[in-house]
Each structure stands twice: as C-alpha cells, then as structure tokens.
Image (cartoon, rainbow, N blue to C red; front, side, top):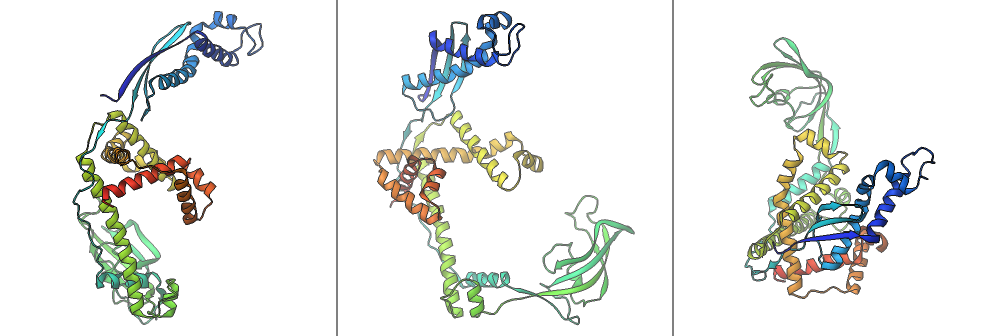
Length: 415
C-alpha cells in the first residue's frame, strides 16, 4: 500500500556507544562483582564477567527511540498508528533497525454535499404528552398505607410473608418475610401476584401454581404451592395537577394543565429534534463515506479497536468493574470483543478521514482567537475554569481540530 514506508536505519559510533554506556551504568548497579562495591566495577571488568551481550537489551531499548526520531526527521512522515519494529542486527559496533511506518491513507472524495437525504420532522402526539405527565405523576407519587379493611388491587404494594413447597419440600430461595411486592410488576411467576388481588391485611392464601417452561431446568413445568400472608397494603397516591406539583417539577411559569401540556410538548419535541439531528448527521456521514474511496490498513483498524477497548475499560471502571470481571460475567474473550468492535472502528475511521479531507478541500481554517473564544464559551457552559477545560482537552490544537470537524460536518449536512 502507498502509505506504508519500510525504512532501515543504523545506529553506530558515538550514538550506539552512549546507549551501551548507559546500559552498563544501569546494569552495574544491579550486580555485585568480587572485589568491588556494588555499582563501582569498571566497564571492562563487567564485560569480562558478563559479556557485552548482557548490555544489548537495555541499550536497544534506548537506541530504538533515537533511531525512530531519526526516521521521522529523515522521511518527514506522520505515523497514524504504532510502527512495526524489527531489530535486524546487534553488535558491539552497531545496531540496525527496520521500521514499518503507516501514514494516513489517500482519500478520494465522492459526492459529499448534495446527498439528497431527507430529514424527519419532530411530531408530538397528545398520547405522548399524557404518558409523560402520567410518568411524572408516578415519579412524584406519595406511598400511603391503605386501611386494614381495604383490599389488594393492581398497582398496590403488598407486604407479604410467603413460603413455597415443591414435591412437599421447602423451595430453596422460595421463602420471605415482610417482602414488598408490587402487584403487576411480574416479579414472581405467573399467577402469584394475580392471586393476591382482593385479599385484605391478615388474610392467608394458598396459591397452587406451575413454574413456566422458560424457568430454570430443575423447576420448569413443576407444580408449586405458595402459602402467603398479607401483612400490609400500600398504594401509590398520584399528585393532583396543581401549583404544588408544578413547583416540584421546577416549572415556576406553569399555572394550568394546558400550560403544563405545552411545556411537556416543548420538552418532548426538543428531545426528538436532538435525536433526529443525530440520526440525520449519521445518515449524511454514512452516505458521504460510501461515496469516497479509501483503503484502510489492518494496522489502523487494530489501533482504533484497541483505543475503543481502552475507552470501554474506563467505562467499566466507573461502574466498579474490571474488564477481566466483565469477561468472566459475559464469557466475552478479548478476541470476541475485538471482533465485535471492528465494524464500529472501521466506521469511525472512515468518518474521520472523510471529514479531514472535506476540511482540507474546503480550506477550513480555525484561528487561535476563534479557538480561545470557543474554549471560553465551553468553560462557561460546563461551569469550570478555562484552565480546567484546557487541561481536559490537552491543548488548543485539539479544540481547533474539533471545531474544524464540526464545520466539515455542517458542510456535509448542506449547511
């Protein structure tokens, strides 16, 4: 491939001798030679005892960095992933490396402006508004204990004692005391919750049920008898649509049901418009990347997948998990995870090269002043200082790159 450079480079003379000397100083501190304090043996005595070859590994580790910088300076190539390294030979006089360096592939744009992709319009139905309001009322509902004469109804929470028997033997894990069971939640097997409807506090009942087909192997299709006692019945009391409820929602400007509906409609519409915009951008980038020509090296794909896996590891850490624990829970091997992430990695790479090429062709430039203004606005929006924002981004160049990519997206969108 045109973007693969194989370069052999030799390090000899003073450069290589300096690496050997540094390796000797390091090794000499780790060994004890008779007649000398630790770390004080002369180099010729050390070499006579251990051989010059004992310095090669540490010397090569240092030399490879020097050689790599020389390659970059000589070739003026910008690598896009980790280079492949081959140590061709190592002697007392020289070391020879072979670097395989991959730069950005050549991108040929196809049509990226007039993509003729339809953008949906956000529509909000009365049913969606009513459902959202009902969800909010449920969220702010008050739980009250029902009168002792009241009966269990669907939606209530029955506080129960229960015991299960299978084949006349106590069911393991099938007992509980003062267990709060929401009727209609389908927490228990079919028939259990339905069988409690109509009971009052103090009532006891035997439920003759059968475990479903999709249950555990040892219990599926088996008959079970549950003895249940009702200790308490709680119900959820939904708040009325009044000033107190509007205040709880943080809507100081809402005074009527109609105003609440208008507010909820606005909120739902904003969410839908954001989702539609994201999908529209995705559709545009997908179409434009299909129209372009680019040959992506397997090494570039692997590099992107590894980056994604590291990001996934960070997400797991935030949940208190390691990737090893995740693999144990899910049976997902590193190879399977790599394979699973590869299509997304290829898509990300294509979108990146597409937008970089669009930015180049359209001559998109971002000045330091524009980037600093953007950084200031972002810091204000996030409620942090500009110093904290710059620390998170790393440099002004990263902000300039992000701005350039957003401008390129707008061009692909047709804006």
